[in-house]
Image (cartoon, rainbow, N blue to C red):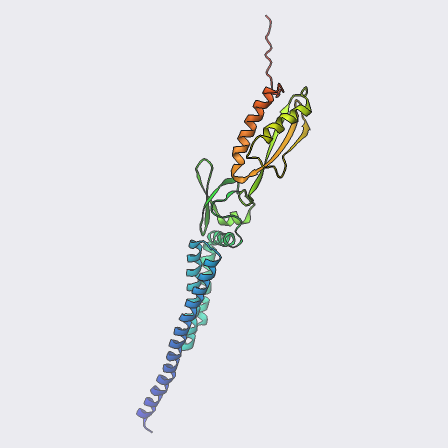
Amino acid sequence: MNLENIDTEKWLELALDYGLKVVGAIIIWIIGAWVVKSIIKGTRKIMTKRNYDESLQKFLLNLLGWVLKIILIIVVLGTVGIETTSFAAIIAAAGLAIGLALQGSLGNFAGGVLIMIFKPFKIGDFINAQGESGTVKEIEIFTTKLTTPDNKEIIIPNGSLSNGNITNYSTEDTRRVDFTFGVGYDSDIKKTKEVIASVVNSNPLILKEPAPAINVSELADSSINFFTRVWVKKEDYWTVNFDTIERTKEALDAAGIDIPYPHQVEIQKQG
């Protein structure tokens, strides 16, 4: 028996076996890389079509790319014959450790994704959330930035933002402005309503439909309260609010209708 021939045959057999595996792995890598690229390209098109935020697009596409590449590497290593069970277990353990360490950040990231998908607000909307009010300036991956009416910037984590109540004042084209005007008990109810109605009807920014409503809402301790409701375009809300309060005060004074206010009586001690 020729030992040299046996070794040569063994080496040729091993080379052929591993050579086929290597060729197969290369083919799988080429096809897999093309598939990964196609998936990312298709996902980018879908996100662009649905107007996903650009920063969120980049983050999600990078994350998707890394996940698909790791899966491809594991498949290629398995094709060559390398044991991938331990490798996968290490990746899973590392992923769990990272997830626990970044639990808050991941929650904010998930909140950002939910905001992008369900769109409870968009850039430019005026909202109230987490006890803060402002115009939405930026919607980022982990946080949302608001600009307050007095030009302060507020940064709210997306996790708490997506899990809390959100009031969006910009969704509808019109808004209702509510007023309460109190007059003295000696005042004539009919005349008071006519004065308030004259102010409301003379303001071109107040909509005719829905019609304004003026009603006696309460007989308070020192006043008869008139609850007045008018509808305006959302951009006219504050203009109508301030203007109506000022003009109603002037009209009531001109009509001689008393607006009660607390009086302070001084008692002088006689010596």
